[in-house]
Amino acid sequence: MNRLACLVFAVIPAVVSAEPLTSFSQAKRILENEIYADNPVTFYCGCSYSEAPTPCKKNRTRLTPDASSCGLAPRKQPNRSGRIEWEHVVPAWEFGHQMQCWQDGGRKACKKDPTFRAMEADLYNLVPAVGELNGDRTNYRYGMIAGEPRAYGQCDFEVDFKARVAEPAEHDRGDIARTYFYMADQYGLKIGRKQRQLFEAWARQDPIDKWEQERARRIEMIQGTKNRFVADQQLGTILGPN
Image (cartoon, rainbow, N blue to C red; front, side, top):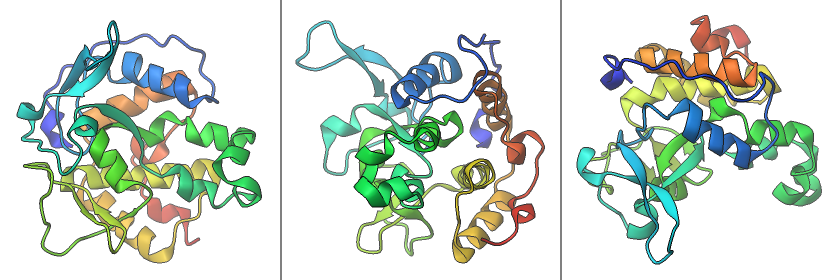
């Protein structure tokens, strides 16, 4: 994501001990207040965002994207397009389906599983996203979409609802790949052969930039786990086939 290469990062102290998190709500607070506090920019569209009053709710605020900063336009849901949500790069549905607890009772059952809770709250796998894009992407796999139809204004993000595929911008693809490699490395997530090949190509085409490195450094300080595909600039091919 080279558009942030000139950003001067502040030194942000960690406020929690360096250990894996077990609460999604706790993870969201840390992301907002510690990881992205001095770089409030959405992952997919590159929109700046800030805290703003919540419509129709007194004394309440929410993180709101500045549509003019990125040429964002709603597809169908103006209200959801007007708020920031924390997107799982690897959807909870995807890693949950590889666990026995999901077979026993879905996400509700997995909430009792410590491994699932750690995966759900893992800071490496969470990014700020425009709410409507988070909803439209749902649990679709990442891939390439012919023609790149734009449905969100100037935001370079496409969703093929029929094929259940989401295509991110080029500057996000390496970040996504290295997140998947981390989740496979840390938790044994299985990645299909075709998906792995795509991610290996994306990791090469979109190299690690300064913000991705800084974000990984902050997360490692707080969470205590390393994404070696960012910190050590290792390639996903070393994981071997799943």
